[in-house]
Amino acid sequence: MKKTLTIIALAFIYVVAGAQDGGITPEMLAQISQGWSGSSTDKALRNAIAATPINTLSVNAENAAMINTEFSDRVKTRGITDQKSSGRCWLFTGLNVLRAAAIDKWDLGDFQFSQCYCFFWDQLEKSNLFLQAVIDTRDKPIDDREVDWLFSHPVGDGGTFTGVANLVTKYGLVPSSVMPETAVANSTAQLRNHLGNLLRQDGLRLRELAAQAPVSKKAKKNQGVESLLQQEKTKMLTEVYHVLALCLGVPPTEFEWKGKTVTPVQFYQELLGYDLENNYVMLMNDPSREYGKVYEIQYDRHMYDGQNWLYINLPADRIKEMAVASIKANTAMYFSCDVAKYLDRQKGVADLANFDYESLLGVKFTMDKKQRVQTHASGSSHAMTLIAVDLKDGKPIKWMVENSWGPSSGYKGNIIMTDEWFNEYMFRLVVEKRFVPADILSMLEQKPVLLPAWDPMYLPED
Image (cartoon, rainbow, N blue to C red; front, side, top):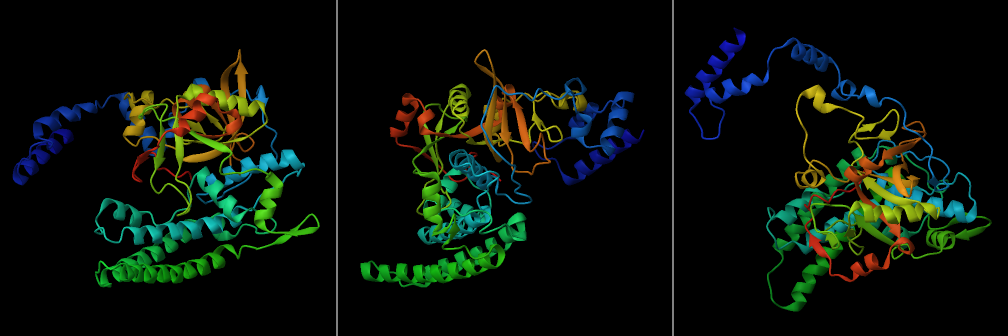
């Protein structure tokens, strides 16, 4: 009876308000409402879901046993890092890859690079990237899509391996003991908010100065406007530096290491001994775009004079070949994925069989990976360090990544992924060039396809 009265009331409202094509009519509502049968099963499920999270109720009891934790091949690593309440997974992962190489080369024990040191320069460089991009686009209207995107994303704590490579090459590295973590570094949301608003008002000021400048075709006057904007930008970055120094500390210019004084760049060069920016190839599995092509994403970088995220798009099986070769050579890799999908956080296992949402909710979820990317239902959200694979007859059965959520999370601080899950939710992998076949390396000779900043693949890992 209550249901009937509700439909009548809605029908009255609909008539009074006036019908609109495409709206829900009373006749349509009567049909739609049949989606609720009111059966004892529906009522029981409703009662359960009203008081219990969907993920708890959808746990697949038939898949409750812990997955086998043995791996045929595994990179030697030591210690689990913890990014805490920050969006710096890309930085922790990138430095963990370098840490594994340094530990293997120098037998450093449970050693860590300073994430705080690199994060300081990351935030300063991103601030400059935004302000300079505002200067470059000053002649475009404020509602231009590129300008609007810039002011929507002035600065963030997420990123990619390209940022790690550029920042370390320019500013070097220091041990964690030289520039330790701070409370702000461990919880970056407030810094991101305040720094973002400071940059937005600075960006508006730069646009105002540019608009007020006299219009002239003479080169000298145009150079004068450019010089004025650069001077103002430098003043703005001085304030940014001050804020970062308060929140993160002042980055050291030199420090003591094994009995001698070194600069951060010297430390990086001596400890690792290779060209970080040109030692790696970035790979992507994006089935929404053509494989065998090279793509570049506008503004998907950390430094104005740095490199955009540039990747070769490949089928998952080709990426796996290189991943296996790297692991067998005891070399960890930067890996990113859509981590939250079908992840049992307590066990630390990512498996498509972990949850049975369809049985609980009574609907089918049919999108494949390509469709999920196209509709923004899935994308690269978190970076971790790929360190292990379990091979059977030469084929991968499961994989393991070293996470940065602390040693008590997941499986001893790691996440184990079934190969089926890897196919569906793996997106990015960064591999040393020595593990990349010649036919794939030759693809880098292509002119990259430039994608806009608002492309679905612009998803800095956090």
